[in-house]
Image 1 (tube, helix red, strand yellow):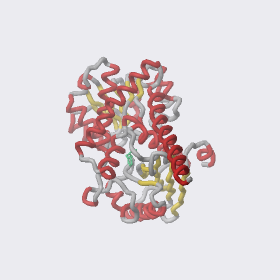
Image 2 (spheres, protein in one colour):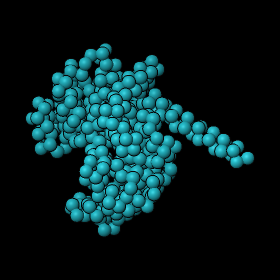
Image 3 (cartoon, rainbow, N blue to C red):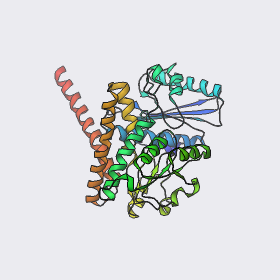
Image 4 (cartoon, rainbow, N blue to C red):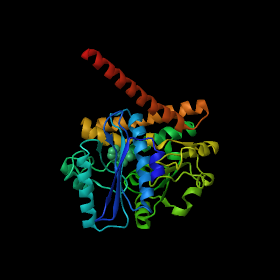
Length: 363
Ligand code: PHE
């Protein structure tokens, strides 16, 4: 854990071991140049606290780049709540309340929301103890599950990626493999099926994937065959780290574009994809729909229509990034990263200027 923190470029990590639930809690604050840190809370049993910390650090970093990509005034942060073993409902609830106490003690340093393993009902629980909670149920004043909004953004990004690779042809002509049929993968697969695309779906939970396959007429792919199944688009919508030295050589697709955070195990894996001629749409750009929805509906108080429009801008953003990357002959990850860094640099410069102006006034 020492080396993970040593090699990380973020601001700070709040660490708590909860004895009652045998759970680790990590809140990683990566960069608050653009505003308070805001990012979801992941709830998951990991193989070790180190893996949980690693996830928190990388997820928080991804949030910094995501907010910068969509130019909304928030910083990168993420929470991971990692019980050492599965909890029953009562244990889970009391753990979430204690997480809420920590959140409240941070007094606005970090705001939380939904991520893998948490639901609007969980946010209601955390919200009993803390402000700065997003994604509560509508009855409790929140905007609910951001999954469908994230799916909307991924869909827009997929349209741009397919237009780029297949000369403007529609998604209807494509085969898309969706990995993960949870709160983003399921609405995405539904939408693609309505469009007439050939949809392949995979999920670690057999009953869940079977039910969705029957509902939308999709074909089921076994989890162990996901990487080697031929398709036009591979859409990872589950866990991170799935694009790595082991999986990339097996891929039989033209495009990788999905909602999962941290799809690349290491940034260098983008070069492996590029080398194989597989177009990788950077996750923090294409999956920003959920973040946009949280900010738009709960902070800016934009209407659903405005929120949808803002999310649909992901289509143009992806198209631009892909064009510039093709011209430069490099992986789209570089252009996407540079864009976000430019936004952060401009904000830092404006802040420095702001402080000079203030001192001038004082003089
Ligand atoms: N967890 C989702 C993401 O990483 C949605 C989210 C964004 C939740 C911002 C809270 C805050 O994009």
